[in-house]
Image (cartoon, rainbow, N blue to C red):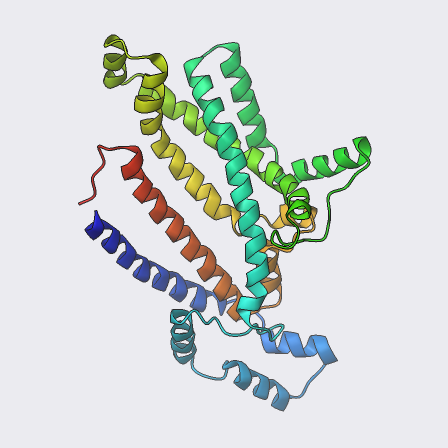
Length: 317
C-alpha cells in the first residue's frame, strides 16, 4: 500500500511538469502583447523605449526557454510571481477567490451526494415502478437544466415571492458565517442539482448491476437481513463508479462556474480565468491552470485511495 502511494505521488511530478510545459508554450501562441495592451489601455500610446523597459521588468525580453526555467523554479517554491496586469502578487489575486470557489464546490458536492445516493438506491430497488420513473425524470431534468438558469430562477423566486434577495457582496465564512451561508447556499443548490443528476443516474446504474451479482443472491439465500445486504454488500461495491463521477465533477467545479458566478455576483476562480485571458496575463493564466491541474490530480489520487477502503477486494501492490 505504501509503495503504491509513494509511486502515485511521484507520478504527479511528471504530470504537473507536462501541464506546465503545455500551458507555458501554448499561451504564448495567443495573439497580442500584454505589455502593449496594458500600456495602451492606460495612456493610449507609448514609446518603444517604455515598452522595452516593461518587457524587461516582466522578463519577456529573455529567450522563451529561459523564461520557462525561471517560472518552473518559482513554481517549485510555490512562488507564481506577480500579475502582469495588476502588478499584485498572484497569491493575493487567487487567495480569496480560491476560498470562495472551494466553498461553493464543497457545498454543492454535499448537496449532490445527499440527494444522489438515496435517490439512486431507491430507484434501483424500485426498478420500473413509479418511484423509479420519478427519480429518472428528476435526474434528466437536472441534466437538461443549466445551473446559471436555475440560479436566475432562484433569485427571481426569492424576490417575487418572499420580497428578499440574498446578499450580493461576498462575506468570508470566518467573518460572518450566517451572511456567508445566505449568499452561497443558492449557487450551491443551483450547481448541486445538476451535479446530483449525474451522480443519481450513475448510482442507479451501478446498483442495478451489483444487485444482479451472484454474491448478492447468495447473501439473500443465506437469509441475511435485506438492509444488511444492501448497505454492507451492495452499496459499497456500487460506490466505486459513483465516487469517480463525484471526484471529476468536484474538480471541475473549482474553476468551471464562470456564468453561475456572474449570476450570483461571485468573484471566483472562473471569473478570474476569463479576466486573465482577456488581459493576456500570462503569469496569472499559468498559475490558475497549474492550480486547477494540481487540484484535479490530488482529487483523483484521493479517489484511488478510497477505492481500497470501499472495496476490500482491491489491493495495491
